[in-house]
Length: 113
Length: 117
Image (cartoon, rainbow over all chains, first blue to last red; front, side, top):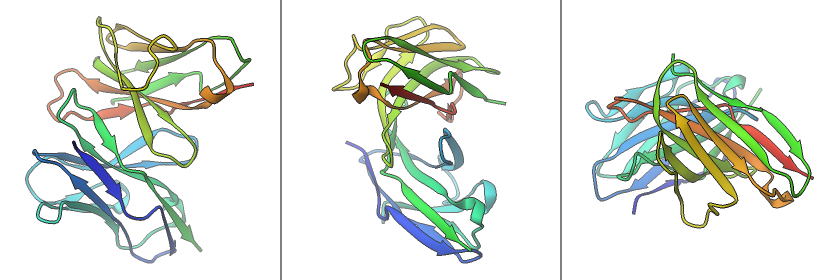
């Protein structure tokens, strides 16, 4: 069965500092990988996705992620965060059945001034 | 493009009553819609998958008779929480997958906050 593990439940960081949110997945088949952001009391917004091709994926709001097949990781990075990046971030993998997304537990990014 | 709406955004109901939540794809046809439940500070839990014109497929542990899902058209799916109880209070989020979308992307609605008193 496929699964996703987000290694950090909370990541505090100062404004303008770089940040990395970690995500590891397990799968025996090819995967599609996603990062979503959720602001308080809102739905999910897609940040970026990896389907195939280049392992470095660039998304919205200056975020990027790198697919590492050997380490089964898909870590999210941003070189300089803003206060407005404070939110919940979810890593997800698309399972083989009916296009179901399997989500990680989420990481709360807290950007401090 | 690819906008999904939910209505209502917030609803408060009394224990024992039923509540209907609508999920609409505004600018595309959604052959498949998904319903998720999210508890505070927790990840999303898939409740069911619905295909237009077919019965929904529920995830293990989700009560079919309590959470009624209808996907009657390519732009509308509804979730009805029947005989709601306080433990049903949660944030419910739907998503929709576009017809002929080879990238399998799901577009998410803004969510509905249900509070059962």
